Image (cartoon, rainbow, N blue to C red; front, side, top):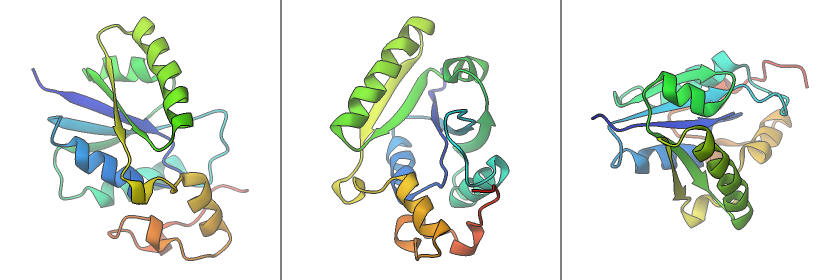
Amino acid sequence: MKKIAVFPGSFDPFTIGHEAIVKRALVMFDEIIIAVGANALKKSYFAVETRKQIISKVFKNEPRVRVDHYEGLTVDYCKKNNAGFLLRGLRTAADFEFERAIAQVNKVLAPDIESVFILTVPEHSHINSTIVKDIIRSGGDASKFIPASINIKDYKGDEDM
């Protein structure tokens, strides 16, 4: 059976931390679907299609990575795509507590789907999308926090902030 993992997130924007999690997880899974989710609680800066295009560019030479988007429950998206694993990156203890609670609820909703957590490397633990988004929005140089294959000009805000 093919091991398929879904890596869900808003990825607003996609950072080197996200990229590193996917690259490290490729040794564990046959396919990883990076699923850009619509989060009603967050106001997006980049349109979903822009985020998908940017992420696709990062993994254009990796056939085992697919980029998609979804709305609704992540476990329902996993079932629809025959994914038995939910992949999440952890930077801090607070991330762990938040993700643990979600994973436990997901386990009740979908007992056959396992949550897999990968700790970020120490040099990425301070990077988060909110901070990177603020740097970009303010016209700063966020290139140290964005995958090298991305031109900073690709990160134009599509939404009104």
